[in-house]
Image (cartoon, rainbow, N blue to C red; front, side, top):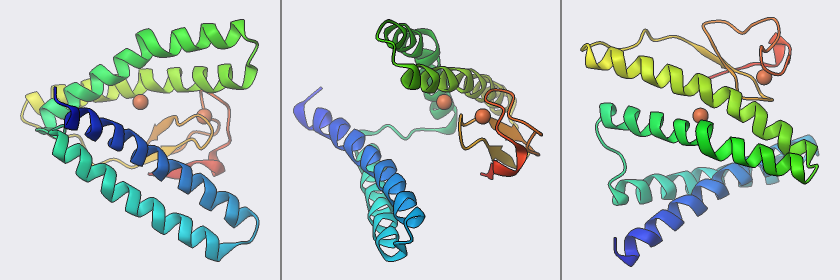
Length: 166
Ligand SMILES: [Fe+2]
Ligand SMILES: [Fe+2]
């Protein structure tokens, strides 16, 4: 692995983070009624997405859909088995309740992602696609509801009307 590969990985990580950060900043600006500044944050966020996707392409990390599903399963599995359990233990030791709750919510949802990606891979290997379902995402924990939002999120109890169509 040469240095440019490392640089592409770092640039992909940085641009991806900038994208999400600017979206969070845009929401904050909107909540303060600063709609013009919010627009600027959203425009910059979209530009960072362009950069991130191009860096990922240059890395060669966008492959066939079968390979991409395998990569997705392995990423989720790492988060479930290693990353979040370690992070949760550390947060408990340091009495960081907010972080602990955020990690636990994510861990629960990663299990669902892992299952859904595995099922998709099985379908693909059988020469099929998934049904084109609609997904509704919990804005607090990220739980993906299929076809219809539940009355309350099974993970964090957020009510149905807060779910966002994906
Ligand atoms: Fe996930
Ligand atoms: Fe939730």
